[in-house]
Length: 388
Ligand code: NZQ
Ligand code: ZN
Image (cartoon, rainbow, N blue to C red; front, side, top):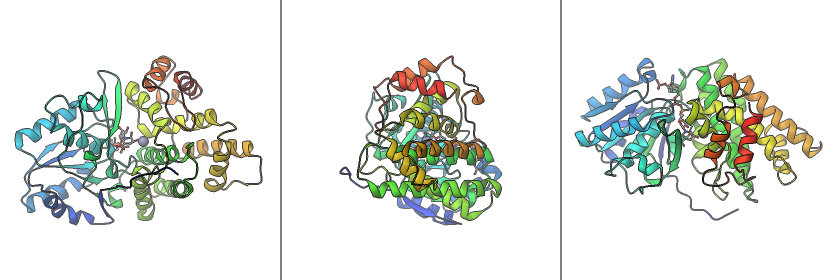
């Protein structure tokens, strides 16, 4: 296990009616004028919008709205949000929704203190210095953005989708009420589960040895998803299922699983190119790519970790040959995603061969990705091809 510095600064208010903490938390972090960021209207349908507005009004917190954040949030929305903040002297940003609203809000908070275009921060042309305080109310269990410091923003003009982390963007607090996820449609429940599992898998399969505890925690999160996602799909109002998926979402990516390991991911950079070129749902792209990636990286150096995965996560018989076990575990993974209604091929999400080479090149433009088995352009291309 490598050295690490533990720091997960986001305060979590978990459970039913925890929205009661909202106004006090905004005030605690110096908020008096709020930018309220949300997506395409799901929070209005579920009544959460009215609840938030009532709280802000009751507690004399003037607010301005940035609505309509798209899934795969655009840099244009970030620019718009920064403009509103400057114009109205906003001192606190509140994101209500899924990862897209939260990610957009994150870059607004940092971009506010940068005088030029916020895209510069994403492409490394400018440094993150500080950020406005951010609070979130999560409505979709998936990205873990509610408890990490990453923001993933798309620029469709340049065909780029970039994910970048910086401590200044970590939310100060997040309200996690599982009942807000009752209305999440089946497709998003399934894609969210694939995303949580992918974050866990990225942290689990690593070449760093000896982080035994982190690996067992990861297996617990994977088993939680495998157990509860079908329940949430069959019965969307099942509190226990929604609560477990919600907490799994946060724990999969907040650092807990990656401390002491290498954080160089594989399927995410490959998926971000698919989203950048085809605007597909992130979790669906991950469900498609994960099994072929697993097959591609399976070799003598990695087979024992796949064996652990098969035995500890999927309950396979440890007595069997390691390769046979590994392959069964990969099949189980793919079958599970398919049982949730997720696609298993690129063609199902309307991706053909046309851009595979360009996307493979883009995914590896800064060198090989991943460290479990480093992937060069040709490797990424091969994985895309086998996912067709
Ligand atoms: O826009 P609204 O109307 O809110 O509808 C959304 C959207 O259509 C809907 N939804 C959310 N909560 C709902 C709901 N519908 C009904 N009831 C609810 N309670 O679901 C759709 C998808 O929402 P979105 O926020 O886009 O989904 P998600 O949370 O999966 O976020 C995806 C984005 O996050 C990035 C992805 O790449 C993608 O851009 N990621 C962010 C990460 C991070 N910050 O750490 C890491 C991830 O790996 C990921 O890359
Ligand atoms: Zn993800």
